[in-house]
Image (tube, rainbow, N blue to C red; front, side):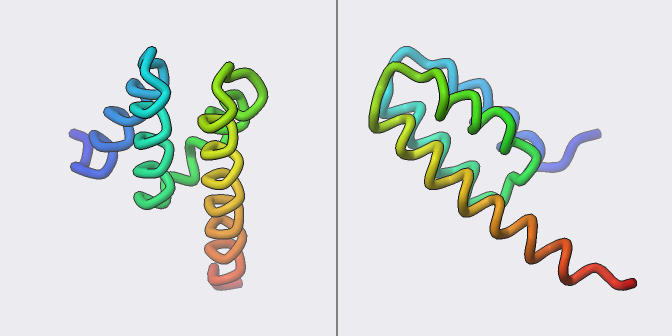
Length: 79
């Protein structure tokens, strides 16, 4: 059974394929807010391939935020 967060991440991942750039941007922002570090590869693909400049910029920003979050999580692990 998946958690509510996992379902929200899946919902926003699906919306990254929406034809409306504003929908894609909103989902990128939501994924960042959720701290969904597991979607960094998808964000990189969007950054490299999306036709909309604003979507690419949102993916770049979110990717950086998630990268920083992932690094701070790594640094907080014991051992």
